[in-house]
Image 1 (cartoon, rainbow, N blue to C red):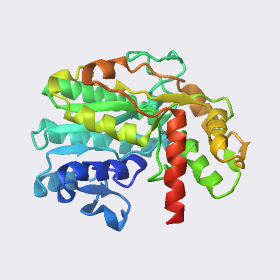
Image 2: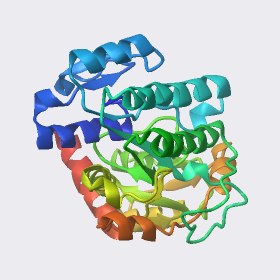
Image 3: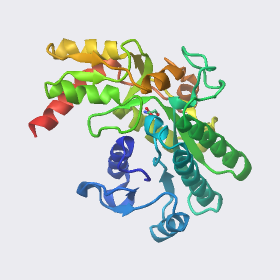
Amino acid sequence: MTGANGQIGRVLTHALREQHGQQNVIASDIVQVADDNEPYLFLDILNETRLYEIVEDYQITQVYHLAAILSASGEWNPLKTWNINLNGLLTILNLAKDGKINRVFFPSTIAVFGKTTPRVNTPQDVPLVPETIYGVSKVSGELLCHYYHQKYGVDVRSVRYPGIIGYQSVPHGGTTDYAVEIFHSVLTGEAYKCFLAPDTYLPMMYISDAIRATLELMSAPSESIKTRTSYNLSAMSFSPAEIYAEIKKIIPAAEIEYEPDFRQEIAASWTESIDDSAARTDWNWQPEYDLEKMVRDMIEKISDQMRG
Ligand code: SER
């Protein structure tokens, strides 16, 4: 696992260890990971030699390549974002091409969409002209995955994650982060300052659905994976006003203030809802959590964490 300290990486590492055994999943990241994340290796994803060494030393068979800079942070340093998001992936695809590993997971995102993409019920195959460097790097990554599959038979699999909401970790540097931050603010009795406008609809997904989708995609028979760019993946769509209203049903004292910043523009360039029928047909994808069920679970789990 690269990017094992990220919002998804932490939870996915844990889920894979439950399946394959603690010692059989190596977490890696460029920051020190919490003690409970052993076995852990420090890894700069741009260090190609070290990546080849790790794969050989630990006899790695599959790589979940989660290391990336997200949409909002990416805009502060576009060249660095391109470099990290693309060159890390290239090394991993080459490891697969060279026969050193046999399967790769590459996370793509709703950030691949842009203003020329149909906004509602966005189909699988659409124009991908994103406005952020993060989106540009992920579209390019999808194309590289497709190319390596067609040309070299590399078994690389990918989904376009919606905004991910989870209680286990807090996201950093993304545009959909608000939908996690809001829970932590209201549960500590603070008014949440939302950086998106109240009516900004985005596709979202609860973390347990996102993890299950990843595990199901990665264990599906190779011949059922027909899309080798990246699969649309959907569960729910809502706006800040709607998630706030849902939270308020359980925490009547919850308060929100709106102070949209540059992330509003990013969110407005993405789409509102997703058609994921290809994933449903090819590998039987089915989400479990809608807005109501997700909000209830988030409040329960974060409250438990706060009680220690
Ligand atoms: N959650 C991501 C972001 O906001 C989208 O992939 O950048």
